[in-house]
Every structure is written in C-alpha cells, then in structure tokens.
Image: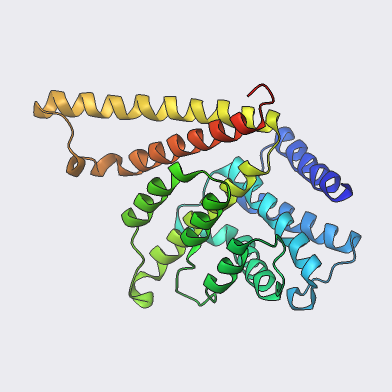
Length: 267
C-alpha cells in the first residue's frame, strides 16, 4: 500500500542519515519527531491526538511503533534514567495513542475476541504506575498459536514483579513498563515481517545468542576456577542481565523459527 511505501521511505531516510554519521540519541529522537510531524502534515493528520479519528490513531500508532524500533536498532534499549528521559516523548505518545485507539475501537479493528479482551484489560496511564503490557503480549501469543513463549514471558514477569509503591518505585515502574512495551513492539514487528526480514532477524538473533553464550561461558568457567563448583542460580547476580537477555534471545529465535516455518511454501 501507499502507506507502507511512505513508511519505508521514512525509514530509508533515517538509515541514510545514520550511515553518513551516526547521530546522538538526542538528535535521533529529534529526527524521528521531525519525520513524524512531516508525515502528519503530508497526510493531513491533526497534531493533537484527541482530535484524531480511529483511522488516524491506527496510522499514528504504526508510525510510532516503527520509530521506536528504529531508535532501538540504533542505540539499543533505553536502560539508564538519562536514556529513558531522552526517548520518553516517543514512548508516552505511543502509549497514549494505543490507549485512545483501544477506547475508540467500539468495533475491534481486527474483529477478534482477543482484541475485545485487550480493550477491557487496558489500564489508564497514570504517572508512577506500570501499564500491564505483559497481558497483551500473552493474548497476542495465543492469537498466533505460539504457546511455547508463554512460559518464558511469565518467568520474565516474575523476575520483574510489579511495584506496589508508586512513590518509592516509580523509577523501576517506568523501566519495567518500557521493557514490556519493547517486547510487545518486537513481537508485533516480527509477526508483520516478510520472509527476507525474518531470515535477517534470525541471523542477527543467532549472532546475539552466540555472543551472550560466550560471555556467560567465560563467567561460569571463571567462577568454577575461583570457587571449585558450578554456578548456581543464586550466584548469577553479577551477570543477571546477561542471563535474562540470553533467555529473551532464545525465545525470539523460537518465535522466528515458527514464523519462518509457517511462511515457507515447501512445508
């Protein structure tokens, strides 16, 4: 469609700028916001989200989703407080657009029962509280018949329990919310990808897994030499982030393999 072509053109512009000279995180966000604004002007979309129609919101959501994925491809997932602050305008607008689109969808866009359930589950965006993106990811997995990821996503949610004190834990809430949103964006993007894109992501994921496995193996070998025993679960503290990332990459690989298998005409 023409919309897809425009999205591809915008992404190409961003990639060209990145190849010439990789911009800073702040400049990347500024460039993305500028491109999004230009696209709204070209397509006569209102700047104010509250004035958007249901179709406008759906278009804006897609643009923001691709923009967030592009930012992450250039600078990685925002982890530090400073990084989260830089990308906050994009995350906030995406979450608000998504929420308003759900509320506007009296008749679900996809017409599926899971979409109706998601509209009932969506929580209001309140400062200092965590949006429950995990439940939505779980619903999307059921729709795609990829049940093997459910346990992994459940374990991830257990590792990062939802904070009960918004005042004391607002920072961790924001980080957890963005991590869950990132997983949702990745899953949505992967399922919409073409076969060449899936194969490219599969290759990259295998590279990430190999690199993480090497790092973890070196840690475990060093631990054994120092302590005379194998690493136990409670010993993983110094490398906990790497262990979690390794689990996520393995889950992504399984998802990609399933989707490639479904698209492969020879199977």
